[in-house]
Image (tube, rainbow, N blue to C red; front, side, top):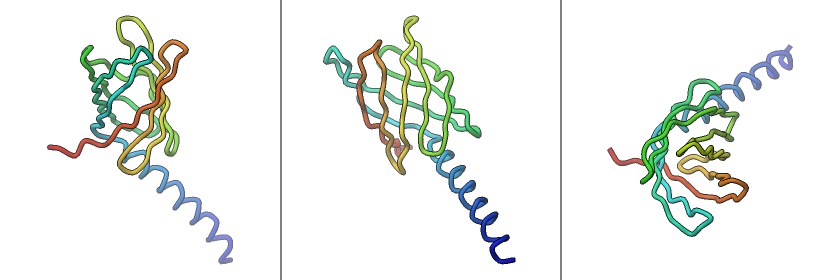
Length: 120
């Protein structure tokens, strides 16, 4: 009888943990993209998580664009941004106060770390 209760209880606890991790990605994150041509761009991502959907905006010196096709599964997430008609797919892994992102620049990839913006 105890075993019958233990397994469902563990599954529920795991599901709650996964949802809590996903919810923590919501907010403003800052970083610096080093583009394949050597430029550095300050970026600010503002994420909103709703279940397994990720939405929000990305802001850089090129302007403000929306986050499209965003998905989140546990501690990994993906989305794309479109700048001047070009799509830039992003894939990331979320940690407590930072996230690693890989961005595809038309076949060339760059990695950056973004950190949660705690300023008010």
